[in-house]
Image 1: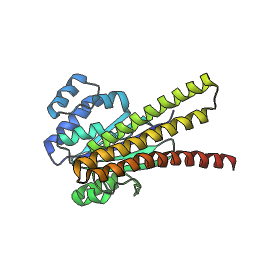
Image 2 (image 1 turned 180 degrees about the vertical axis):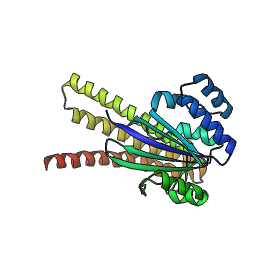
Image 3 (image 1 turned 60 degrees about the horizontal axis):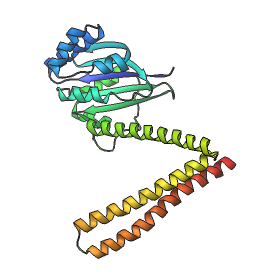
Image 4 (image 1 turned 135 degrees about the vertical axis):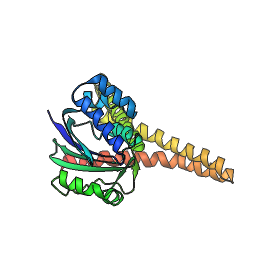
Length: 258
């Protein structure tokens, strides 16, 4: 079974917070649940679900400048965003997550500063001491191709991740429903899917056109002008989206034929 290996570096400017976090992690590592709960309450941080249910093969080490946690997860777990959000809320300054993705045999590295995902240079300029630790802890000078163009709040990343999970679940449900319809009707599953996507494109275009009309009529002068534009959009947008769906299917059929 494939799994990802993570190394998480935590940086605290506040020495007392550093010690409290380390004690909490030590108690979790030793499976001393009562003591772990006490230190979690003192910090206002509860990462027991991540630690116990999602992280495994833990290793913990620390120096006055940082705390390091090594752990493994399933390949779909991703970044420990909820844990990081809580740790930043309790006073953590920065964090670095280095991940080896077993399925593709590649590494990635993500940098966090004051509750935001940032690029490497932003972190090192704001906290120069982190550069020395990162270079000492990780052998390679990894170029992270997914570095953000601008800082992104962890809360926004959590929301985005949740939306992606919801979209994936919706897609799985849709595919299962289309498969059921295809079996019951005896139709080609691809034809059923195409019909469903065309219908969805029509609805999407109509909704976009209507919303445009509602917003512009409410916010701008010239009601009849915006009503006229909206009517055109209600016609044009569904046709555009349907054309895009058809084009994707035609391109895929052409590729299969080649």
